[in-house]
Image (cartoon, rainbow over the protein chains, first blue to last red):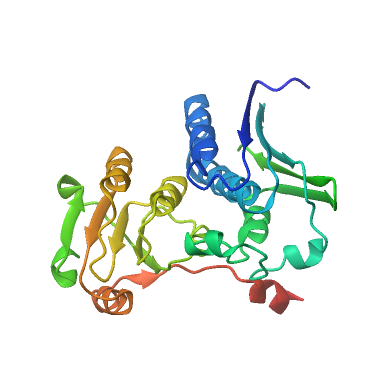
Length: 141
Length: 120
């Protein structure tokens, strides 16, 4: 099915200055479409977390927003390095973030669990040396 | 809140009547992002742009910078654009929390991994 609205954002590795701009825009676009309240906040939080993950952990990637009737979909797709231990990565408090990320208030090991908690559907696939793809769905009431 | 914290109002002097019902205190924005509640005041010692971006994502209404820290003008400008109330207090984060708790503010109930484990 063709999405009603689609938007794509490139997120660069280590670009801490711009981190959050894509999510702020995603939030604005959704607000214009008429998404509000709890769902909007959950999408915004998950989007910000996944965007930060791209900055902190990936070699760069893309964040895509798709809006379908009754569903908001966020897809994060990066070009590596991939997650060696997904089970550990999904655990709250487990983090491999750099000192730089930590000094800015991130890298507490809450990112992936928080995305899972906020999204209605959550899927993560990762291959070391290839990359990670996270797909999240949010149901519109 | 301004009085008990002996705070400077950096942004939003016209919005001081905005109600807040809960509070959270953290320098970890990752943790703050788990406190999804718009009527929450955030007390923090961290003064980088991500504090304001995190607030934007969560629709928070009020930020309190502890220990006399004042964020830079560009950070305050983006807080202003969002319609936030921004306060600065000389108190440490711990003491700021203490006086706000005494005033009746309470923490946000946060889901933890323990809850899931307890259910098993």
